Length: 109
Image (cartoon, rainbow, N blue to C red; front, side, top):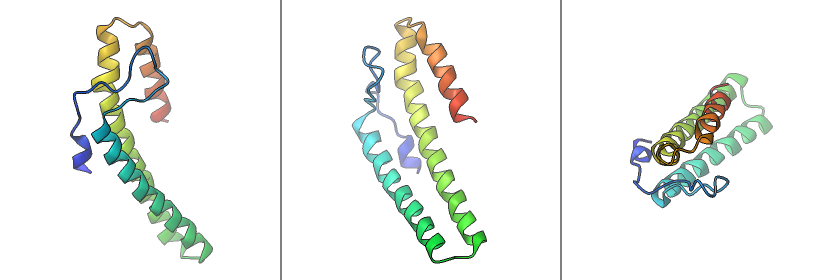
């Protein structure tokens, strides 16, 4: 997972198009690969449920999948801060602080 922390200097988002995620291609590729693995974990959990696997084993797999998603979220948040947020702060965009605080509030629930 450490390889995801290598971030590009390319901007992630444009202040003109906030609805579009333009994070660096190298980061996108790494995140998509990780998300594919997480998708496999989720399918595995579903199969465990179908096969009536012992509950404790399923709970451990759910915890692992949640940790993997949290890790991807941290990497994406770091990229967002280093690109989108900093760029918009330099542009003196007054909406970025409120938007960012809303994002932090949602992901820390």
